[in-house]
Image (tube, rainbow, N blue to C red; front, side, top):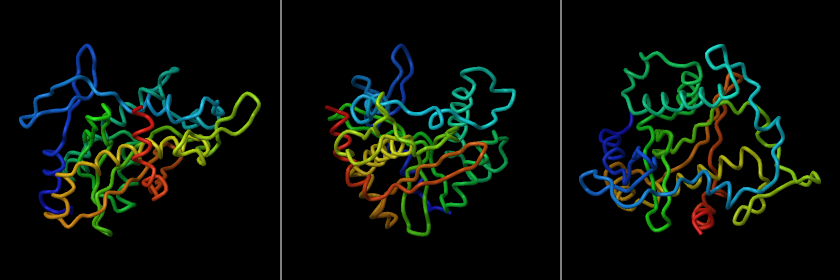
Length: 259
């Protein structure tokens, strides 16, 4: 079990929320939870335009080979399934363990929570908003977990349906391997590293919340915020730890995509 009060701290310290309307997006909130200011930019498009290459990823890297079943037919079936699984995982991550275990789940939701359990990760909260007002960006952690083995908080980035080869790099029309922009210019532009870059930004934004981080240390003795990339598809599940190479570059990635 995670330390008592950790989940409450994670929930109550959130600096923003998703606001739906004509322009759906994240906004900062004041002390009573009221959204204010302009809608902040999401990081997905910024990463595509500022960090990823303009090369083309092979179909074997981006197209899912997993069987989706009759409920998810059609060209947009995989996208609809992914959104449904993401929503369910986020909702159940915020629920208690008993409710989570007894709930009816999609197959990939079961696989995702099974993978988290195997990795020693206890879900605390789903869709926890993180942001940087100075840079005008925001996103949400898919799941935030507690890991007892090293007494750490872990930001989990969940990706569903990526059953292809995640390490095949994008190429130019002359079949030359493409790399990401600085500060990741030595990393090939592949699906795995794109998702690592996204996770590094999300984790960095959470780790920069000074009040939250100080409370983690003083109340729970937690001094480390880590990141894990989780793939869930019908073929298998796979977890990748966000290593120090990405963590060291995360601040500069934020600066790159925000300029």
